[in-house]
Length: 537
Image 1: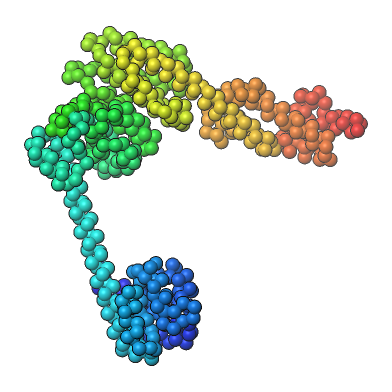
Image 2: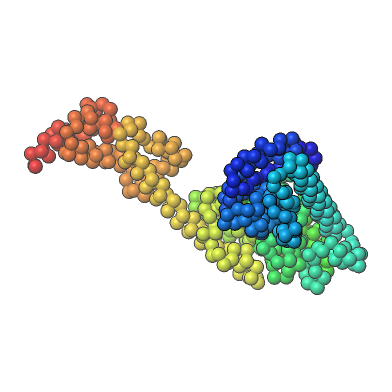
């Protein structure tokens, strides 16, 4: 905080006499005592308009002004800009204003005619008071910030210790009360989910990505009642829930897709089993961490529910196959291939030893998550495809048996394929119509071709050719020929342009070639067509 006069305070003069305002500007070497005069005002109303632009720290005002006098002006400032210091100039005895000045927060009165020494002394005192107040505010805000940082660190360390170690019950709840941590003793339900961002070789990049994940998820988590978002000692993101009505499994799967959409990065999720008491939360965290590791090992962002301690190699292979093949078949899209892949996955699952309902949930969430990620990768907003009442995860949680889950996923993937086809058809139609408009507007371009149009739209030549014919019912070159012929006919019939000018207008530079081109498609030369049209008039 500066203590010298390098930091100039702004002072505004308000007086209905211009002579007085000019005198005040030159009466004192303002910069030498730490002030900078700003634009002055001839009335209180004018001053109120200027204050928003000039932001003065001190206002020196005459007490006798028309319409609004100095005391009324001081009252307006006290109500709207209480931080501004007011000094009043008066030719009257001070006593009658003494009580009123206290109420209005007026710093000082100066009797006219003003003595330079008195003005300088008052302004120095005012500056000292303002700078001391600012220093106190600065130090107080710094103290509050340090206290907040310390509390955050203490709470973070406490919660991490809670996730890792056995904590004495009385000490646990005493600390929670002391630091006002939003954890309750009477819920009987505590659950943990670990969100593990994929790592890179650059530690700084990893830290930046973790921070971005926190920024994306914080608003979403804040809308969930009794759910905390924090980091563990490994810098993974942790959701700690004490709300029985909230399914971390469902939201975890949704968050992986959200991170994928917002940040284009993978994040692996795992959930533990709920526990009855906060003292046992470490068991839920241990399971959640293990399941997040399983998800990362299988290179699949799909959400994993709490699993068994037994080997999950077969399950990982299924997830890997779904992750690699499902996006390909959805991207075509091929409903037959998708149905076959999903059916094979559930069939293989039934053959695994000791497969359980939990495994069906794992596979089902994998299918849903890969499906939503594929939609996102292809620019298809999944929120427009599925009901906004719930995401597919919610529906799965309501099902009670493996057969019901498999049936629902089959219906889900069939519906998705149909929606992708409809979306792609609509998208292709819009693309082709845009290209047709471009062709009509740039018909005079002799280089107009399928290859050029494909390059402009960043699409494959073959894809454009197939899509164009599917939408228009005619191939690209035949359509280009037809619009050039029709345009040439209109110009020959309705204008006096020369043949070579007509040729150039439809993108054909060589007049001889144009004549042959025109005759090939109309059985007449351009001249014969024009003569026939004129004879018919």
